Amino acid sequence: MTEKEKFQRAFTPLHASPDTLTEVMKMTEQKTKRPALRRAATLGLAAALVLALGSVAYASDLGGIQRTVQLWLNGEMTDATLTVNEGSYTLRYPDKDGTEHEMGGGGIAIEDDGTERALTEEELFEQLNEPEVEEREDGTVMVYYLDQKLDVTDKFDEDGVCYVQLEGGEKTIYMTIKRGNGYATSTTKYILPNEFNN
Image (cartoon, rainbow, N blue to C red):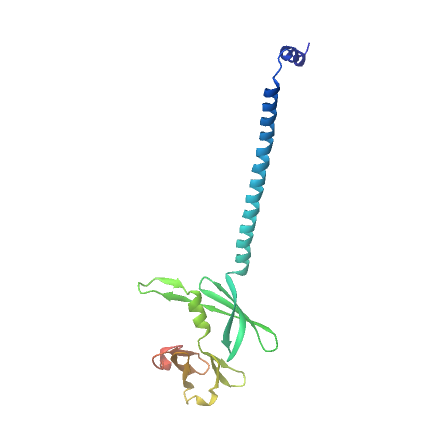
């Protein structure tokens, strides 16, 4: 006689009552239902995690916070895509012909206690609204500020320096331009040519 037969013979006289059998069946059903609930909860949690990580990956693919803005570029109101990432920005915009252009910038600010920090999005946007100087290949020098386009080619002195006062918004900007050597701005006075880009 095998062990299986011995086991069956030993337990043959034992019979469970119908109530006990019903209870055992209920317990068996409950055991099979719990893993199904756990599995569903686990799948739901996994799906939420995948979506969250996907969002993070998507945001990092963009390289920062991206949004559409309107700003003055070359004296024209322009729709552009601004991407800000830890103190720097990238600006993508179309010209009149629809050709896409890209420019970037950024910087740091030095706090009163001497610590450095990345510029905020608001500070970067202010930087984008500062006056710009364009020196063209034909020798023309243009200044752009908000909706203003100024040709200052004939305003340079014999040392190649030009002083321009710009009005816009609530402030006056004093601009000193050195032909071929940059420019400086201030809201209080003209900066002397020897104080920058020597």
